[in-house]
Length: 151
Image (cartoon, rainbow, N blue to C red; front, top):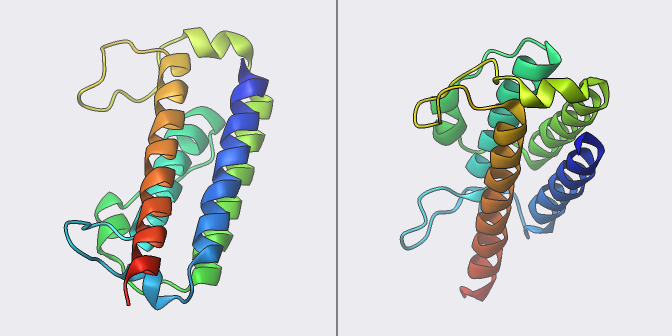
């Protein structure tokens, strides 16, 4: 299961990077419109923080000091920096999963975020995190296409 998860995470982090690269300009990454409060730039920063903490730090022992508030507060981060951070995160997830012992999946995840079942396994949380990645990938794709429709 670990190798399948690694392939899925890699594939979809590559899709996030392709979406970020497809924006017509850097300003568009930070535009909010209508009821969309989280533009692509902030969603990319959020995915970097989320996966760096819950996969890299918790399972890969790669220290990461997360500042979740800044993931949504920062603006105008250059596209090149976003893409670099996403690439670093993809590599971190790949390396962590490659080193992960299969028995680790059935043990409780080291961190228990609020709202999750007590004693949730790392398998459960990795599946959740993959769904979370895809939820935000869809939001980024929608945001980019919505902006393209505006004059």
